[in-house]
Amino acid sequence: MAQQRRAAVLRSGVCLAIAVAAASDSEVCVESGSGCAKKAQWGASAEIYEYTSTANPRMTEVPIRTFGPELHQHGPSRVIQLDLSADLELDYPATAPNLLASFVRILAGERLPTGVERATSQSFYVIRGRGQSNTRAGEVTWSEGDLFVVPYLGDEVTPVCDEKSQCLQHACLEEPHFGGCALYWVHDEPLLKYLGVRPDSKRRFEPTLYPGSVMRDTVAAIPNEDESGHVRNRRGILLGNVATSQTKTLTPTMWSLLNSIGANASQDPHKHNSVALDLAVFGGQTGKVYSLLGRELNANGSIVNPVRAEWKSGGVFVTPPGWWHSHHNDGNVAAWVLPVQDAGLYTHQRTLDIRFMSAEQEQLKRGASRGATLPEEMAQPAPPMVAGTIVTGHVM
Image (cartoon, rainbow, N blue to C red; front, side):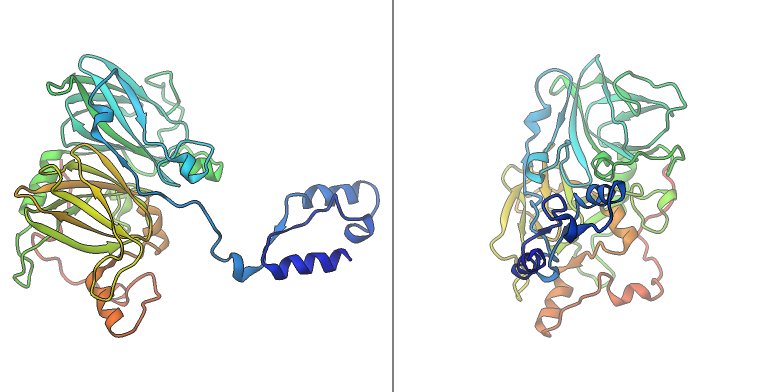
């Protein structure tokens, strides 16, 4: 009888829990004593699902969410977590399943620690102000537009603050506008908490600084026209590291891009499997710069029923994985955005699957669908670099 009940549950597509405790000894265990008890103990957590009805399990989605710059423009020195754990049904702070983003406000003349226990990678972008950060690996001085990353530094070296083992101590030396420096801090501790692990003591990369002036000059050096003579609507640079020579990512887990969109320009839809935590470095004219996000793309290349996310200078918006999104600047000054994504993992796994509207539109017109996560041309030798389109080398 019990076997018939289990078969009926499986046919319905509903979860079948192996309820060892509820079944009779003869149905579950033919042994006696401790052997039978051990089977009952090990089987108590097991569940079995019918495949086709649960191959894509119902999960809470990464929401589209915006966090305004006012969060870091007023008040005392503090860390403001951009926490979506309730939406994601997680029991630890997270902005995306693998990442937690925060604003860090430090009043001029004050110091503030930021600490984590398990992160393999921490990224700090300077929204405004001038200051310095002390780490187990030494001190870094920063100013507006700089970005620096820190790996897991182990526990052997004396910590610089008491909050948590991988703590940094930040000092704001000067900030005339809102009375306090502001940092955009992203790290991958949610990934490690999900896995229930800690990093080993070996550094995966070295602490690295990307000076804002170098990044901006590099973007400015990219020609306004591409090799075909068409005006570029996308001028951006990927931030890489010598430790990630194959993935070309900020760290082994995180990916970042400094991207500009010119006046009266639009960037066509694209999508990827990573979550983007987008910082509007400079949102241009108020209400003139925005992104459109949606699940589907029409055959004409437009996003179906898009949601609009405004770019507010110093604010953040979340782009869910797999959603098509386009960027638009209806103003007369260039705007800048700095996304941080968990794309280091996806790139390493060959599953990032970034797709651009133009290529997808051609597929749709032909009635075809590209199933592979990597386009065929990626298996071919890379063409020679064109001056101004790709910049490599060290900043120091």
